[in-house]
Image (cartoon, rainbow, N blue to C red; front, side):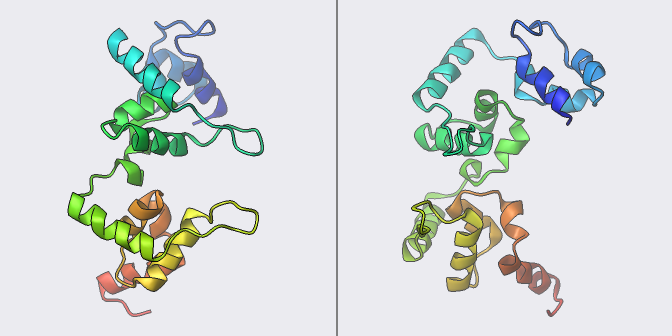
Length: 189
């Protein structure tokens, strides 16, 4: 999606674009498919009651600024919203943070995990906790996933993503998890 498409989506319903702007009209303006626009949060219709409820959730867990002054990523904000409001769906979080439901649904925080599995994953995380870097910040999710995989060779990308709070596809692309694909297909590396 182009920057212009993002701008149109973000201003939908504001003084800059009428709430009656249709996804097809926005798509024509910015030159992308109607489907790309229609799945954006700004074009999702919610009742006034639901909007009020979602606004209250957002106000209770506002988007944070990073050290460089920029807003935290939408996915990171969605993860924090889910942590604070466990019943929040991917669709609801997407409306709050302003991205598509699919972008949020792929995030580990929105993947269903049984209580038994959560207990097992929590134990793995406790045995290999996230480390702090020299600057006091948490190590990157990918680096933590790599360490978890090293200590737990049978750990899948799905489970590692659930532990570290990243998307499964991001973890699956990491070198530490590439052997799983080869093993699963019977190809030796």
